[in-house]
Image (cartoon, rainbow, N blue to C red; front, side):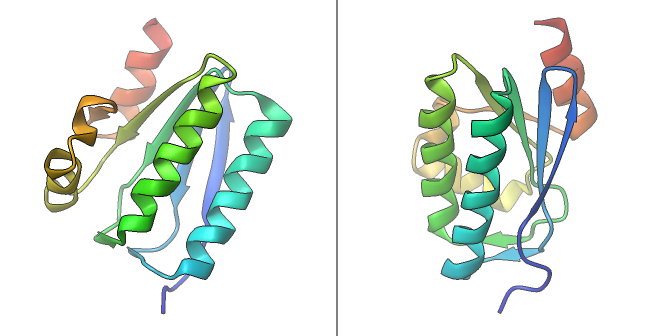
Length: 120
């Protein structure tokens, strides 16, 4: 079972940061809870730029990829941009294998992602 399920969402100007609380994201219930949190935030705030911060995440199930694609599709309706930061190299391989590395931008850490998105 995942420890400390869910996400924290912070916002600075037009940039929102979604950070996963757990090192392992695998429970269907916890992924569903995170999805609800993120979608409610998007519906209420319509962020123009969203960073998914994977700092501290060591493992995730393939359902997380579905969550990211679902959120990406939702953000497209608001003409928003989504990027991923601080992802473990082993987890980044999953994006390469599935060719999702071609639709998401990656940054080594949250600070670089915020900096790059602030200059856009």
